[in-house]
Amino acid sequence: MNQSKRILVVGGGPSGLIASMELAKKGLAHTMISAKRFGLWNACENPLWQGMRTNLSRYTCMYSDMAWSGQRGGIGKEKEEEDRQREEKEQCPPCFPLQCDMHSYLDRYSKLVSGSSHNSSERSWTTYIEGTVKRLHQTQTGAYMVESVSADGTEATVAEYDCVVVASGIFGVPVTKVTAASETESASDHAETVPSPCVIHSADYHDAQRFANKNVVVVGSSFSAAEIAADVASVAKSVHAVFPRETLVFPRHIPLRMTQANTPFLPVDLVFYEIDPTKVQQRTEVRIKSATEVSGARKYMLSMVGRSNPWVNAHHASNSDPVYAAISDTFSPLVRAGYIKVVPGYLNRVETSTHGDHDIHHAVVTPTIAPGGEAEASHSGLSMNRIPCDNVILCTGYQPNVMFLSPEILQMLRFDGKDLLQPLILHRDVMHPELPGLYFVGMYRGPYFAVIELQAKAVVGYISGSVASPSRERMEEGIKQSIEIREQKPRPQFPHGDYVGLCLDWMRELGLAIPSSVLKPEDSTATPHHLPQVFTPLWLLWNSDPQQYAVLDHQLQTEIAACVKGRHVPRAVVEGLHGRWSFERVLTSFMESTMSGKAVGTITWSMTSPQNIHQLKYTE
Image 1 (cartoon, helix red, strand yellow):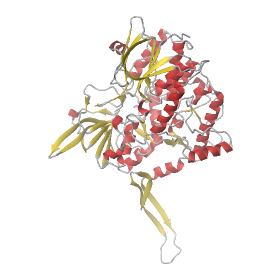
Image 2 (cartoon, helix red, strand yellow):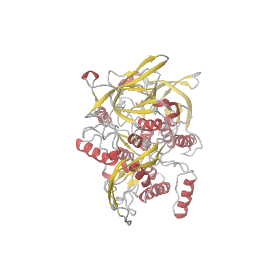
Image 3 (cartoon, one colour):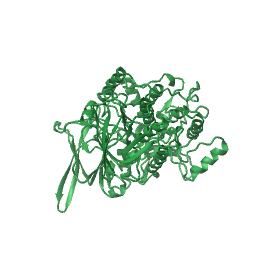
Image 4 (tube, one colour):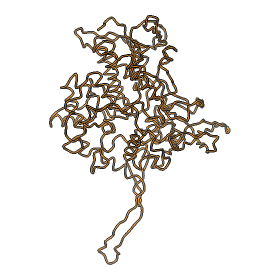
C-alpha cells in the first residue's frame, strides 16, 4: 500500500462520506472539500420540503457499518418488548425516514468518519475543508491540479493530488429547462428555460403554505413530482400534475404476493429486492432487458397498482415501453378524489398577460400520445392545453455537479449535462481508462446506499492496491456498455434497473461473500414459517462483522414477520375503499308491515378533506 499518495475527495454528501470512511479504514490520509455537508439531505442549508420522506425504507437507506439510531436489534421476547415500547415513544426512526432523520443519520456518520481509527494509530485520517472546487485538470505528469476557494470566498488554494475521488453528487444542479423528453431522456434542441417569476424548481420548494388557495401546476413524473403535488393539494385551490410519460405511482407498502390470499404488505423495497436463495449465487446483472422482460415487468407492476393507477383512464403506453415508477402514499388517493388532475404531456412554456394590476399565467402543455410518451409537435394539429395557474413547480430533476472538471476531462468522459440517464461515460460508473487516478463514487441514479458503498470499496481498493484494477481491455468493454445504456431506445427510468444484480456483481468483484443465513434451500414464500429473503446493505456487513450483522438482520426479520402478521393491511383496506361501488342487499323482514326483498344501488366512499385521506365519508 502506498501511504504517500495525495488523495482528495470532492463532496461531503452520502457518497463523499462513504468514500472517506473506506479510505480511513485502509489508513489512507486524505482531504475532503465540500461546500455543503450531506447533499440534498442537509436539513439546515436550503432544506427540501417539510415532511419529505425517503421513497425506500431505512433497511435500504443505510450504510452497512452504522445502524439507525434507536434501530431495534434485541433478540428474544424481552428485548422485542423493549423495542416495541421504544417505538411507541418514537425513539425509533420511522420505517421511511424523514429528511431530518436522514440529516441526523448522516451527521452521526460524519462524526464516525472524522473520528475513524481503523489502524494502530489513534488519528483522524480526514482533513475537512469547507469550500468549493473551482477547477480540476490533469497535469503532464498525470497528477491532478485542483483549484478551490473557501466557503467565505476569501481564500483560494491550488494543490496537486495523485488521486481524486469525485463524489459531488448526481443530484447537483437543478434542471430548469422544459423539454418534450422525460426526466431521464436526453433533452431536445428546442429546450428552453422558463423565465416566469411564478416558476420555481423543486429544489426551492420548502412547504405547501406558500401555495394556499393557489392554482398550481407541478411538472414531472418523478418521486418529488408525486409527493410535492400531493403536499400542495392539501392547501391549494387546484393542482394539475403534468406527467411527460406514464408513471405508476406506488404507495410505500405494497403486497408481497398478488396471487396469494392474505398476502402481507411490506415496504416497497423489501418486495422489489426479494431474492431467491437457490439462485442468488448465479445471479448477475441484467443490463438491458429484452422486450419480453420489459413486458413481463410492466404486467407485474400494473397488477400491483391496479385501478389506483391514475393513468388507467388517462393514457396507455405500449407494452414494450419500460416501466416508470414513483412512490407516494397520498398521490393516487388524491387523484381519485379529484384534488389532483393528471395531465399527460410536457410543459411547453408559461404565458403571462397583464389585466389591470394583475398578471395572469397559463401553463401551456403539449399532450403526449402513446406509445412511449413521445410528444406530438405543436404544429401537428394536436391541441395544446392551456392551464390557468398562479405557480408552476418544476420537478424536472438535477444534473451532476461536475462542471469544475476541465473541458478536456469532460470531453474525455463524453459528458452530456442534458442526458439525465447516463451523463458520464465511465467503466462501471467509477473510472475511465484514459484518466488513471481519477475516480467517481455516486454518479449513479437509482437505489443509492449499497451501490455507493460498493463503489467506494472498489475505488479505495484500486487506490490502495488491495483490489486489482481492471485491465484496459475490460475498462474499454465497460465504456462500450455505458454507451449502450445511454443509447437505449426507449429509455428506461434508471441506467441499472437490476439493482440487486448490480450489487451482487460488485460483491463478487470485491470478494464479498453472501451471508450464510441467506443461502437456504427453503421455500421463500411469505408464510408465518417462511419469511422472504431480501437484499439489503446489511449483506456487506456480514463479511466484516457477522455478529453485528446477526443482530441487525434479526431486526429486519422482525419487521418482515410483523408485516406477515397483518401490519399495514388496515391502511391498504381503507385506501382500497375510495370511489364508487355497486351493492346488492337482501332484506328479510320479520314485520308484517315491512316487505322483504332485494335492494340495489351505489355507495361512495369519499375523502372528507385532502388533509386526511384516511377519513372517509360513506354515501349511499
